[in-house]
Amino acid sequence: MDRSVGFFSTVFRLLSRLDLVLLTALLILLSLGALTLYSASGQNIVMMNRHLVHLAIAAVLMLLTSQISSTLLNRISIWVYLVGVILLVLVILQGTMGKGAQRWLEFGSLRFQPSEIMKLAVPMMVASYFSNKILPPSFKDIIVATALVAIPMLLIVKQPDLGTALLVGSAGFFVIYFAGIAWKWLFAVFISALIAAPLLFFYGMHDYQRQRVLTLLDPTLDPLGAGYHIIQSTIAIGSGGVYGKGWANGDQSRLDFLPERHTDFIFAVFGEEFGLLGNILLLTIYLFIIWRGLQLSIKGQDTFARLLGGSLSMTFFVYLFVNTGMVSGILPVVGVPLPLVSYGGTSMITLMTAFGLLMGMRKRKNGYGSMLR
Image 1: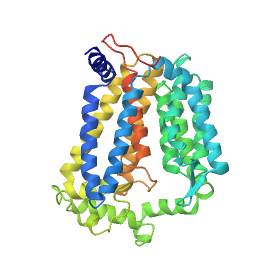
Image 2: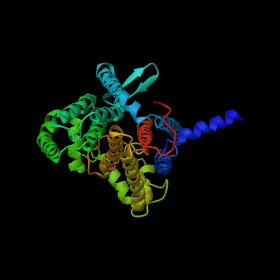
Image 3: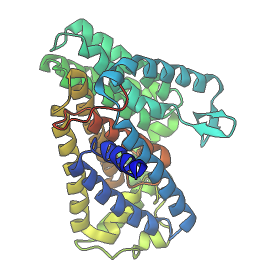
Image 4: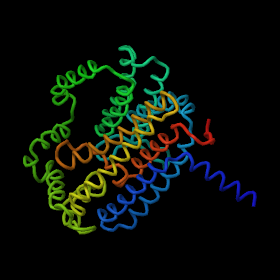
């Protein structure tokens, strides 16, 4: 009897760290994602079983990371960052090739992508750096923080993986922004980016990356090649109309016209099956999650928690914006999944871990402390 009481008490203490409002919104989004993935995969039971396994692992990690206090997270940030940078260097030296890119490390049967670690490590490191500084930051502090973001970004671009580099860079940028960077510096960055864009296009991009930009401007230049993805995805979204064709009734998906329909282009599947109203509902859920995440960030235990929480929430927005933008044909195709909907265990685990950290860093009104201090 005592063991049962102790078990339920422990479970309750673990669950009390979670935010019920955010958790409910995440469960709704994950449920819609599972339904859409089942349709997009052609009712592939094997894929769905793997997806559910990924989801279970991600849920456990979210629960565990929600127990970590802001103090401990701040203390280990530098070590997580350094390990991540070392792993990125190892990827360049002896990483595993796949689909024309060198992004993975293998240790026996374990194969993973170290760049995913940096989606959390970079904002943690920058937030930790600012947590001991007077805010708004000085010009020197901004330069140091920018360097902390740029180092892993450049290593990831080298792989090459522009999509992940964009997410890592945005995660670090949002910490700098929330720290209180002056508008004049933001304007200077914007002007510098405009000046550097032509140089990046002609000298910093691979041929296939330049082709993606050109395809964005006019997909019909290569309708059966580089422009095929965008053309088919926009056809799928448009053909859904206002009400959609119904679940599992999308022609572009069922007839194999839409490529990568269970990963990067799953939003097109959703748009075709549920139409404009479905898209509005889905985007509303996403925006609610982002809004709730920012609310929790404001309630962070300290400066570190508030900066990191705000960054994690806005990085989730970047996932959403980039994926829907590239599927709709307003951004180049960079391989960013639709968060918590696309198939992919690594992305789901990273995002759910981030939400666990976010929920764990807010101030509590109850008497339960963190298990991990």
